[in-house]
Image 1 (cartoon, rainbow, N blue to C red):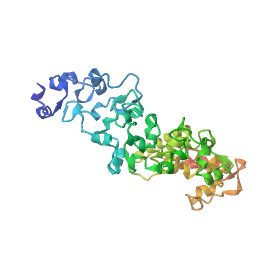
Image 2 (spheres, rainbow, N blue to C red):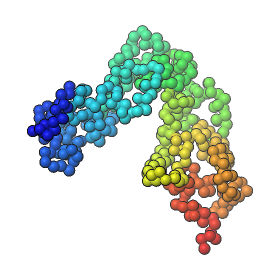
Image 3 (tube, helix red, strand yellow):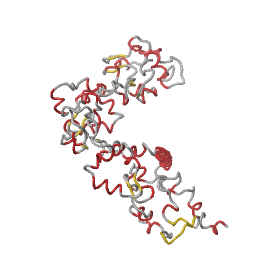
Image 4 (cartoon, one colour):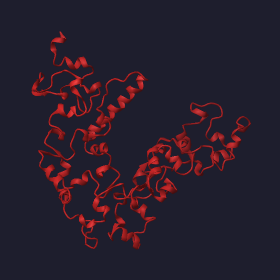
Length: 403
């Protein structure tokens, strides 16, 4: 009956894989034949309809979930009627995943050494809906997943790992699971001792009772090679606490290999956000507000930003020194004016007096500098000022203009 009007749908039914309700001519299983408050005459939301039959896609207590699956956007990956791909997927292999994960797909297309399971398909390692066992939608927690293919008791495996018992180690502390430009699919930034296979420079021998124990605790281990940097750092008035904590340098740096420069654990903004979450959340809210404003402008000239560009780009080290500083807030320069002047030609920006010889009228203990009018991270108001308008700002000091 449906095909009498939807004649072109007959071609769709010739696909290699046909969804069971379509194959059994049960169109009314998903569609209301007369009217509906949902698009395409669906009898309910797509999420509700799919869950009627596929109610076990997401486990009861998942460790990680795929956003599209949780939202019930099944048709972003599956054709609800028929497809030439298994599971009625819209595309085969990695092409479907690449539709959303474009950055990863572009990287994989360019890298020199590719991990064979990835080339064979993302689903070799990931569950597309949810994982009840591991983060990142992995089918099995690591290193169990890796051990499905790699046998740590083989002579070749042991030789490559200098006989260290790595069967229970975290493989991604050294290896990029997708592939890299470094042999052995090590992350592209490799710590020099690892690159030259000098594990005993940091760890006890492979034959010792505790082969993964480091030779010294915390930053004292790193000091063996980075002595000059450590002496300069510890000689500063203010030292970033993670450095002198018991864990030391590995709070922020990977000891073996990393996808980031300088062996950072993750990209700079997310790394700083690990501890400074309140600051990063505030910046995210400002960035969202600014994005909305830009959309509302619709081609009209842009006005001043809500957030400071280095913060927006995750460049905390543009203004702050990550290890230590003689200045407040680990600033790279003692003078606020000179620090801002590294990017902003403030003399052209304003003729307003600033510097050590000028006191802030609102607080004689403070000097007039850039932060007298602007906030370094952002405020929610344009030009990074702490008031809704420039006039509101100026009259804080220039009271006579309020009469």
